[in-house]
Amino acid sequence: MCPGSSGSDTESRGIINCDDLVSKDGGEYRNEGTMRVREEVKFVHGLLRQFRVNGNVGRLPLQEVGEEVLSLAKIACPIIMTTLLIFSRSIISMLFLGHLGKIELAGGSLALGFANITGLSVLKGLAMGMDPICGQAYGAKRWSVLGQTYQKTLCLLVLVSIPISFLWLNVEPIFIRLGQDRDISNVAKVYLTFCIPELLGQAVLHPMRSFLRTQGLTAPLTIAAVGALILHTPINYLLVIYLKMGVKGVGLALACNTLNLNLGLLIYVTVSKTPLKPWHGVTALSIFQGWRPLLSLALPSVVSVCLEWWWYEIMLFLCGLLPNPKASVAATGILIQTAGIIYSFPFSLGIGVSTRVGHALGAGQPSRAQWTTIIGISLAFTFGLSASVITAALKSVWGKLYTDEPQILHLISVGLPLLGLCELANSPQTAACGVLTGTARPKDGARINLCSFYFVGLPVAVLLTFQCKIGFPGLWFGLLAAQISCLCMMLYTVTRTDWRHQAKRAEELTAAVGDNDGDEGDLETGLLPSDN
Image 1 (tube, rainbow, N blue to C red):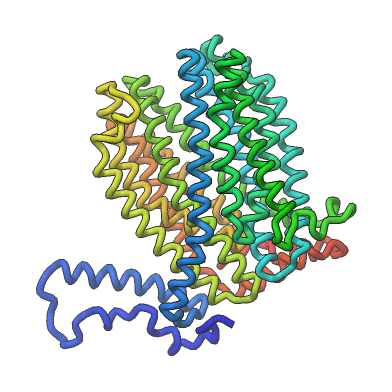
Image 2: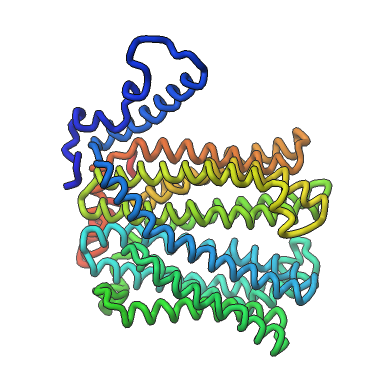
């Protein structure tokens, strides 16, 4: 049992005590700065009081806080590197598309956006359904559950890739009906056709990546990503320039990159000394049993991911309605790409929080899970503040890395500080989202994303941009409103969590997945939505 799990109020009293940080002599505060600090401390104190009331968390020694930070860093740092490495391959692909010509670049950009909306976001969201199951099963030492969940997720993603592939094969008339140029639509169709092997490769990669990282094994993917990226440029040159395959070669090069990633991970799980293999506990019948828990988590997860990803595509569409659409779309594309780079940091931290929370709940340690949540969200707030300061400082410099067009540079300098403010809210809400994943509550995340991005952010963006005539900044104020509302709802949901109840749900969830002979009622046990 973790320290402080007895839950007594006297033991938990000393987490943060306002009285220890303010004057005790009864005197008045002499300046506004001191009063502001006092108010901020009271806010944090109230937030942690909610944690203590709902989860009865006790003290955690400073040494264990440091150990938890290191544990999160060991998971998050390799994921940050991996995310940046995988992101770099898209930049390389865009460079080769730009080398081919303006039409090829426009068609490739259109195809990449469509692929993200209809394919990659769907696969990523579905794969997230296995994260809470595997994380909690690993903490509970139910090893066979990991292999069986990996098996089902792999089959699910491969099956979903089939209709997506048919959509990509017939995408040209869709683009034309939406008003896109015929030449650009044709290039996009060719590119997507030759990206179908990439789609299937991603369907294989996502379950393996989740299988490893829910065990805290993130370095293997980083090593594989380094090797794949080293080969990516030579493969592009071979296919695009030397063999003169053009757009087809760029699509196939992406598929080769994902193939190299999969081969690297396959070699690792085959020859490594780690006792857990993805085929551990898998039987001929296990593929047909126990689907309900996975689907009940995967479907809300994919909705949550798609709602957030699609919002950025809507932003690009709205930019096309502004007075200077070319500059607005270009600036927004650069800012979204910048946001993707920044997002890799809180995203990786969120994965670490999800993994550690899942392990703690699976092991029956709700107090440990709660402290992981507090530490993770605190780190995310720190990073969000750093990102906000850095983006504001670089507002006049960053755009020059991409273009020398004055209008685009002006829009980037206007939007970058707003992007930084968005990250100030986005970072902690991403960490809080990791808590919801670790506690197997993706439905809460989907509801929050729907309300914040589409019931708050989108109306604010449209109202400010077009009705109030603010223009380009209005879109980013809309995103800021969405992120702030998302953060508030996430924090409220997390602070109201009953951690002992979540530990009980974790026990029931892993039992439901592992018990293939259980009836349907048993399979739903622990997956019903909670008020907490």
